[in-house]
Length: 471
Image 1: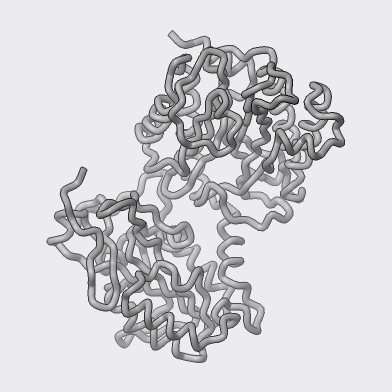
Image 2: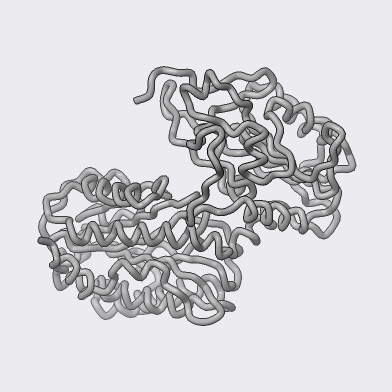
């Protein structure tokens, strides 16, 4: 627990939260293999402005610090788009991109990153900030300025009718009750919202569409970070399979998972870990993780390590006693067959929802054979036990951006069918409290799909064999 300190520094025109970079002030830049280079982020900014008119003005804000309670904040996580374009994980920052260039202090520039000012007295409490000079060195931006100059530079630009403004959630990220917020709000009151959203005349796509199109296709550098996140996650699944026993609490499994994440270099979980045993295995996003497991339970473990913002998302369902019951085995094998069908359909050129359609077909046929629904055509019956889709995009967000059109090489998606059978009077009790989900992260290629998370056993015999290895 840190000593008491104010969570926000008031700097005249704008309120800026603290930043916590770890390196010494004069330490050399160090990127390990999981981190993206300044050149990568520079190329992403260039790719954005290349798709916008020369009179464009792109305005982006970093994520604000979010308060947990009283003077304690949640651990900071940068906004994904801002991280993608800058590599900066420092709060209190903003970015301006100007394809046609801007005159600033007698210099013509095309990009400005605004960062919180250095303050040695505050850095004793909260860690070192970049400052403008180090931000230019570390992040490779053309110009970095003290964030106290943000309003001075931005507001006149917004008042220039020649500029076409692109933004995301404008003015999200700007602290309320600041002079800057009031200035932007007054400006928005007197401007056509369609023009502000970048939807006026011309051929440029709105900024959201530009960013989504770029982020959906993962570069080799991005795949290095994403593969590392997935490898750490599969290692966590293997650790659980080798150590768990009946009588463990769900939170003990969660603790082992997240310890494995940290031990292997993940900065954060990409989302709240889901560890649902017994009756909780039938709750899709169960995150309380307080129940004590009992012999005969299955446990749904839906987890993802995050590495430099890129998140894995891998689910395994294991028998806490080491062996599936006949009913658990029947449901598991059905979900596995459905997942295999979904993975086979995950090919470039296929519709995004082809995997869902194939998996749903297999699940419906199997549930009918088991007598749990009336027939393979019983859509309502299927949705009673399988109420979600099989896939989402994966990347800087666990539910990442994408077109949901035809699949393209370089996209990464999840394939995650499941069956969830609660206690109900019209269901044979032998099926009660069996929730099974299997989820893998799959890379779309020019050929066969690549299962990136294959290191975590998913076939029944492989899972049981690894769990029998418990000493």
